[in-house]
Image 1 (cartoon, helix red, strand yellow):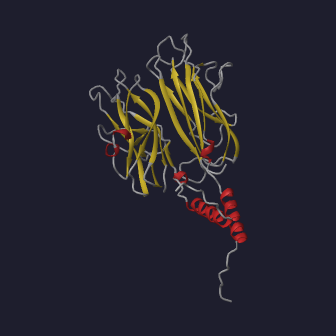
Image 2 (tube, chains in turn red, brown; image 1 turned 90 degrees about the vertical axis):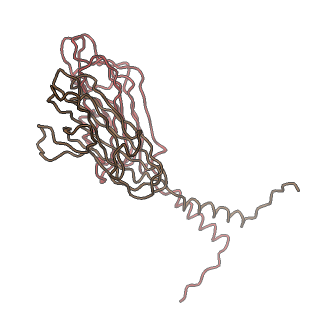
Image 3 (cartoon, chains in turn orange, green; image 1 turned 90 degrees about the horizontal axis):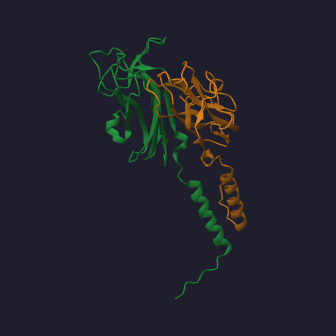
Length: 184
Length: 186
């Protein structure tokens, strides 16, 4: 039987528009509307050496809890100061990074690039440092995919004890931003 | 004649809604799906001076003897992207620990060009913060005027030779990465 265009009716038109609106409403949205940023402008003096820490008991590094899909961008940064090789300083090297869902950066299982090492031969500089990584699964260079759902991302730091100095290093102005990229 | 609002009919309302739905259905989408990210975990010893390089030799402790390349990526873009890039630098300084270089610059080239070809906003200088210190930094910039389509983005470094007489220790770059975020229609 040949195709015969149907004469549309208002009811038919409305039903068609309703269907199309439902499609739009159900279309997967990327997660930009859930971009989150957290910042801590109080400095945290290192409370424990040779171990990851996220608080000195009073002040805590910034943390973000949000719903993500599988792909997202994590950016993190700190301002490290009171590190140095002079005898007054307790440490000249450390680590900073982010941990996932309560784990420290070393234990975060889904990525190996979520921390950075630094050491300062100069004394008592203020050095802002930052890096970004991605979670994404199949795309090259994107790291493993996240399990869609609620996740917590938090800044963690580490200082390596050097000796007999009296000045504790400080991590200041720590920040973290999470950019979900796919369905949330 | 004064403006008189027309009383719409149900059919007019339906036609208007249909038009608006079509706008949504055919609206251009921007390029989050084609965000590109690339990184290089291996540390790279820089051996060439005062020229942009995108590779070097591995550090002695690296079991892989092949050359280390800085990260590159190819992705589809619209006319504008935001590029974010970062690197860890190590073994720069002015002595007395026999360091060859006290600083340099790093940045991003597009489609085979150097950062200089993109613009002065496409690279950053760095200088040592002590001898053989190690730290990392990142920066971002926006590129406009790209042709829609695939483009390649590559990271480059240029290192100064500061102490050829006494220096012996070559500088190292590590943990280099770049991210390209298309921000308009792709």
